[in-house]
Length: 411
Image (cartoon, rainbow, N blue to C red):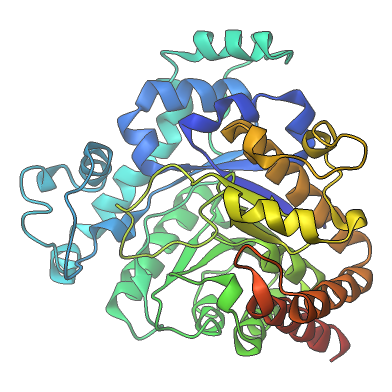
């Protein structure tokens, strides 16, 4: 089965998401519940008019207690009310501990969250005509006849947990069971979220407790930065994938980047991220969001680099390692490297999407060749650290990725 490439929806990315030339670069949209709740008709109009697979992420961890909370956005308050209307005027001034959810109200909370997702396609349609016109102007042919589709799967509310003995996991598991009974197991996409101190292999323990029939899960390891990944981290993902396969379950990483793409060679079924950002996210800091910085994705080294720092890197690398995507080719004159200062924010994002799509294709076609290429790039970075702040350290990262995945493939 092919590797799935999901994108976190953002209003600022609408022009890219209607671009017909990028249609093959992504498979579905993860719509943050905050945007679905607060920008109900705006988000709904776009997503429903687009007619691509989508899910709505409840992002329930934002309601869990944390030591220092920043003032929540209005969209987060709206999402809280979908979970529990009585929280209005209480949260976040008063942190809601686990006893609140355990006090016989959890099934009703689960029902409200699922109700919101189920009625989305029929109730969030106020601006659908506007976005159908946007699609027409972008060269798409919107479906004007059939009714908008509901989410491709339903995501029950969930909490970030430390393991299967965590009482927050008991609530998450109960929500999955309620959703599976309501929609059937194969209509549910559970999210399994771990706090940053839990080993990645903990996902395997949680998978053992899912109700029968669940066939796909999104896994989210809080604050997991792939550039700091160890061989133990990769082994943890592989253990998770193995246990999942034994139960007929496909595993996707809810927040990941190139390493997740590479792990498609050892059974990871897909990855989600924003366009140019959000390849990692802290389960306790969902309020700390914002637009991505102006970074250039250096495909030779599988990494984002601030635009000013990226220029000397691409200037100094071997010419045949420079990007050949449609965006970069259009800015290279007589073999000279492109001038990154001329790229707009949209150019940077378009370039990244094309690069990520090409990476997925390469890994799926010949993972051994991809790993060999990683080793070449790693050695070059270690021996020739370029100006711009990439240096030997990231060469070691590429080497770790190649070694970890290769070891699993050969086991």
